[in-house]
Image (cartoon, rainbow, N blue to C red; front, side):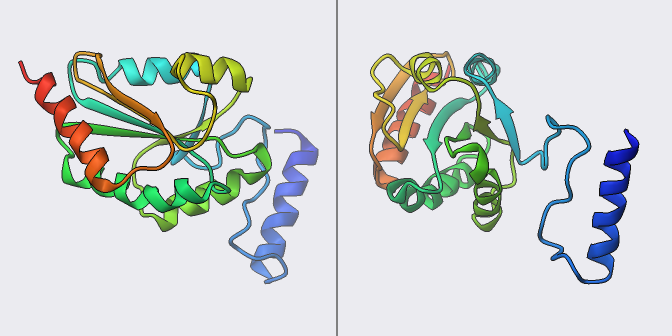
Length: 180
């Protein structure tokens, strides 16, 4: 760690200790690519496809692309969290924040308020490449959801928000079609 970064870190810690800096503010990272929390990891389009593929043969997958500035995303979010809790052995929910880089801390705080306790992702890279890698039918509108069976087959995908019943119907289809 460079002397400058060490000094910034020490000054920041000192300010926190004497109450001059709020403790809810993140301490600056020593490196620019360090993750502030494993709850929200950076992901490229290619890496996201690898994450999704890693569940093939193991679980059905629901991918939801959302953002803190998207009202329909925020409205449906608790319903998707509930699905993960209701089908923990058969379903993997993969949340991907499409927030702007400056809103990363907002996304992280939102995840914590929603009591998400599994790794989620923060989209990086070019938007068009990311959109095309997720679905050729996705225009880029948010929220976007796709449900994939254990064998990797696409069960459903859609733009716009959905009700718990719609999510669950497609998840049950994915789980059922995933059974050997």
